Image (tube, rainbow, N blue to C red; front, top):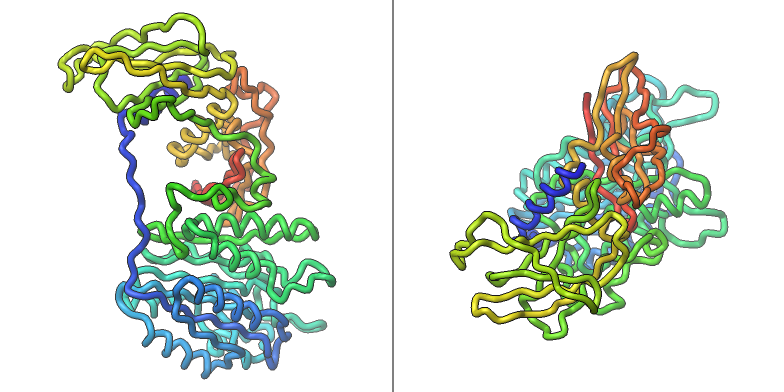
Length: 499
């Protein structure tokens, strides 16, 4: 683990030029929101129309031209989609929201108009012919050459065809995952496969919207959040609300976007303090403060920054200084002598002299302290000292998360030994950055929590001998999905690993 941490630290130093993702450009923003309550042959719904109206109002605030359609039968639904086709064009951002009954047949999702027949076992074709295929909506957007297509389905309810004493159309609650999306498409489901979405939390819940829509609409208006962040925050908040009533509902999203898409502006570099704070439920998850770098007393724009990397022997601290330097020195705290970092066997092309060593080593048990750094510029003048805060607990989390992000393809590995095993040794090695690990067996929705040993800051990468770093799986298992909740409360993308 030590060589990997050192390598990543050097790599980070060598590639410190940041690339900032720009929001997707669109000619215009157009949205269609559909809410179906008044079903004739299957159970009626209470909140789908309200959900569509709420989403329509929200999208108008975000600059969308909004078409709202309510209680659509098959013919009206088709005409509405034709009108939507005409309203969008090349380069546009198109947003489609549907609240109502949905149904999955053989891996395909169908949106049910209000006049869908009450089908029974063996009558799946009736449902197909009378409904709207969700994939076809994506194809229509592609045919119009939209740049960004966003689809949101609050349709993961119980099987609408179930009847007491009869055999229902094959299918269960929830919709099928849309994992094979074309480029430029982003989809969100109010619940995962085989999960159902809550309309309300209790009989005393008077909110006019479903649990998903009330949360998603609010998160959409958060300034500076891209679509992935909106989806991740919605997933976390909805799942927490559902857990309060002992229900499992974990919204899922599928991302094939080329750009980061910001519907309410990009994050400002100088956000007001109130705007920069996370939502209240996320604050409860935050475990440790971020590593802070104090502003130098002389306000120099060339003040050093530091990257901290934990390895088996202790800490490597790499200083990054924009100016060419002739020497670097440092000390811990405000008292004592400064120590030179020495030189490496490389010529700095800017000075044609040996390059000062940009790194120092600290022991594994080094306490939190202020590191004072100074350097000699090309004119021979001493710059600094500059204070850099060293917080070993927060630095460990940041370092391990960086490694996890850079090595996501190694989170899980399969092995056949007296059966099928999936190892998560890599995640255990960097568990200090992780609050929770969830996996899904042959599912795109991680719904099983992996047990992880506690973090040991004295030897963070060591795996206790009693820990079992693998799961035994059924021999027919094809894939495992995994999602990490980090110590700061943020959530990773869902990664899928196939045998």
